[in-house]
Length: 240
Ligand code: ATP
Ligand code: MG
Image 1 (tube, rainbow, N blue to C red):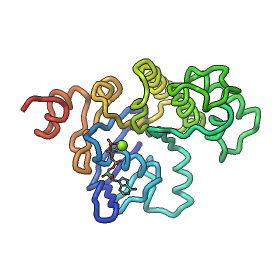
Image 2: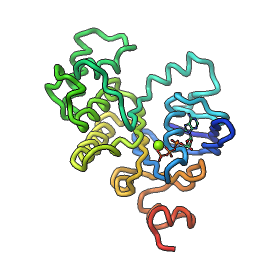
Image 3: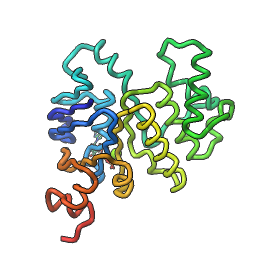
């Protein structure tokens, strides 16, 4: 579904992505873990076409994001949704915040209302349409951000540390929403996290990002019992 091929990204003279290779299957939850500053967010932003790579390519179902003209690129872009670590919540109602996700879609007002209400139910915010979005709790705001992404039914959802700023109960709810989305819509999900246990709970596979590459990818069991080298072993908590 997603193939990342020798992807490199420099910021000035700093090489951040140094040849990332990655394959994620349709309907898979792929979790990326790794120390701070290794390029996890940059990788997701590049898949989301917010950053242009220095070299290399990303293919979504064999369509290249970076080797074709803009129009192509635009169509694929619609299949991808991203939830950021600190999502922006706009002034106005929850309905307006979620419907914002549909602003470029040609969809009738009635369908839009139905779709927003259904999505709010899915994230556990049934009946919140008219609430003032900025007055919600942090966990509710995070669910509004999820709903804004989910409402478009993207084939791919990119999650950059979706639970790093919320309490354990909200974390559990958000993990449920992620599983629900995959199980219901067969969405392909790539998720960054600092939380190893969350990686083990959520990942069909885990990729360990170090030195600007995915140094090892495998099932949680493989990563935590057979780390490929000493750096990974130390990172996942082995004594040396
Ligand atoms: P964390 O776990 O702390 O979120 P990360 O693995 O997500 O870290 P990135 O945010 O991708 O890491 O950043 C990787 C490196 O790229 C960092 O050194 C960062 O300072 C640098 N970087 C990211 N974006 C830019 C930018 N727009 N301009 C310059 N440097 C950048
Ligand atoms: Mg990051």
